[in-house]
Length: 325
Image (cartoon, one colour):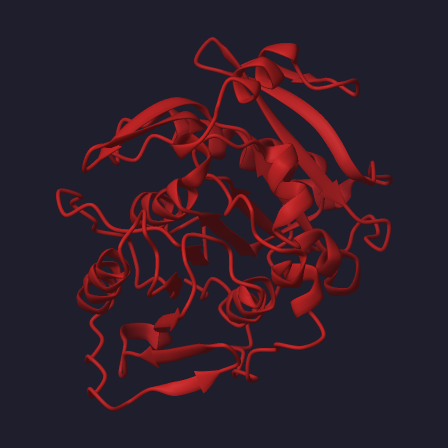
């Protein structure tokens, strides 16, 4: 596998591909057209998730913790060759991070028709990262096409039809392996989130590599019933979805919730076991195996990233490190 770094501008082919996307193709991306009042950054100060107990799990330093220096930057453009294809991603390493100090690592996967650079601008994790001291990866997908009803969506995205073999799982593991060698990563705190198609893909990673990803927090994604999801351990999962989603019906989020309740051995919540969490209503399974948590939060929004999703996702993820073996 040949790894490459490119400090310059993004590949022109990516810009060209994105420029050709219009109308419906962007709907599966990242909530195009969301008003500024809905931006995740504005929610940071107004919509905090309730505090959750954090399992006392010691950091697991990666090989990169021996590095005397690290390259920091808020939007580092990089490439890596996987399976003969040069893949692209954006890396966010805040200057608040120091060599030798294990940092959490978050993968943020875009929806169909968008890019890693676009999500870096939109999802809001870049505003949390310096204060919370974590590294974020914003990968860019390869062309995909999906048909939902009478609508077809296409553009850069993630392979979700099959759990394995899967080109994008291979891409993700290649990035993770590289980052664990070049940065001081806390291998007990590697997380995945994503929107729409990227939310589906977070489920894929949890199903296939629960030994590498400690928890996931998909937004406006769904579940494919043909998946044979048998993770190596119970996986903490936070699902956020809009009841007015016109692209991926909220029923798909509920299907994912039910699937993880079964996978993690949770008892389904009572029909009235809901709680208010800012602008969303949430319910969680109980008595999940090995202390896992499975939560579904719903709100009155369409196919977009809700204002409070960023803070809620991060609070959930950091509360669920990978348990010791």
